[in-house]
Image (cartoon, rainbow, N blue to C red; front, side, top):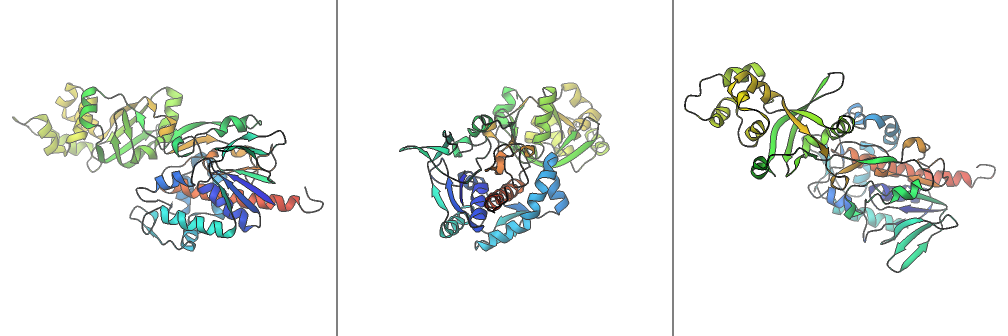
Length: 412
């Protein structure tokens, strides 16, 4: 019972562990010189493994794909993931935000311990093997520095990532190859991404790179219902990115696709309401500049004041009621998401409808898919990694179970 796993990120490594634990011979192939490169970079600022929030809220993070992700997390969810990490000798802690991290915040010690355990279990690693399709006999083919190679396997698990961060291996080169075998692929789109605004040259030169803190984004759906998202973000050369922008990026991206543009509304003073702001801004400012008046009466200065000047007219500043309303609901027009290769993660990919409960492609028996190449998305905060681990575990165990069942006399 030989299983080939193509892709050495968290999903592929977890698939290897699950398949090997079920008794399969496992060979893992990756195009890069070492595995887990995106995993290591994602953990550079502190490896956010999962989240400690209640199950219902956690599951809601997967949006339209909750129904498909939920049974996978039931088998390997946040609690199981934390126990698994501790089994590697890595202690975890819950941060003030509810996010779960390794005690030392680093990804490298976890990855080293994991690879050591996988090698000790008998998983064989093959680096610099780029998957290039299938040969005439249907065996997976690889391009290596030494030439081309076909390998024999009883089942293949693909865990090739999405299309973000291509320099680390997730370059979406698998899309036309699987599509060529008749698999309908949902187009890849950026998620947890930044957006272009089209700043004036003055604003861009003065504020690019600066954080906008203690704000909230207000989104309004087609039915008129509003949702409020507190946090912070960063001004970029072309627009906005980071933090709270990522948390609502799917909704903003979809609005741009549907309408050509998206408008988010910024609450620049979440701790004050419009009547209070109007009252304070109505106080005489005498010979003080408007910048000083805004700072004293509304605690608006720096990049927040710059955003107001970027969007509002002189007449708006002259009317305290209009200015107060703008501070609480400043419209920011987004014209496009940043390119896919800049995004933290990817939406789209292999649809769950094309897979069975073991994550095997219905049209291609013996072919399984896991990780970010599946059609699901989630915000940052540990949700991405948790689902990658869960889908890898399901695919690895599912491939071994399928092979065992197929090898039983009288069972297909």
